[in-house]
Image (cartoon, rainbow, N blue to C red; front, side):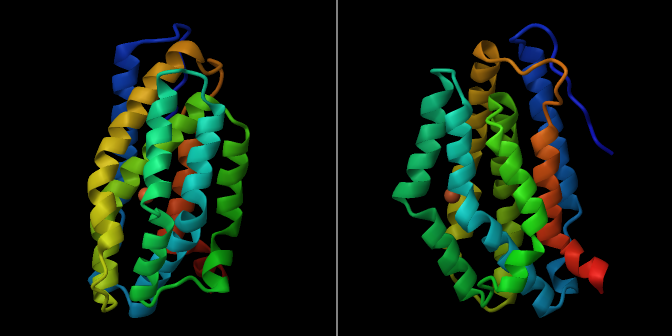
Length: 225
Ligand SMILES: [Fe+2]
């Protein structure tokens, strides 16, 4: 069931910040709890999850964080997002992810990339609106999910015979700080650039969650099978 959070009139409120964080954590908990046991999946299903994850993350994470940076106005939020981007670029996280996928024999094919096209486009168009608060909360959800998903992704890769776990090791640790930083950025941005009270704060979270569900469950294939 969808949880809807409407912004109250006041621009800043600590208890609302806490409840946003709680709501995001519970959406992530539900998503993690829904993951299929890797040992119950076929090798092709495990490969597919890694491949679709790579098709989405390698080329889009920095792009979406950049879109979020372009949207925000608060002086306090800017260095937090910029730090995140600097680490991505300086440590070449997309190269790390590509190595991870290749080592697991799961580099995305055209079929893998096309399976996520529709939901991927929806996330791109959502972030293209440059709605600052909604973008920051979407990226906080994304970071939080990625950090919790790393152990699962590593299990899929090791079941596929890989030993290259640099990507999952790095992201299981560094995204804890990134997620906390994004929630601080969210509070700062809400204070100076609040969301229109009629808008759903979690709109982007739900659009991105649908994409993540497609990465895991490959609904395109399920529908056409
Ligand atoms: Fe990263």
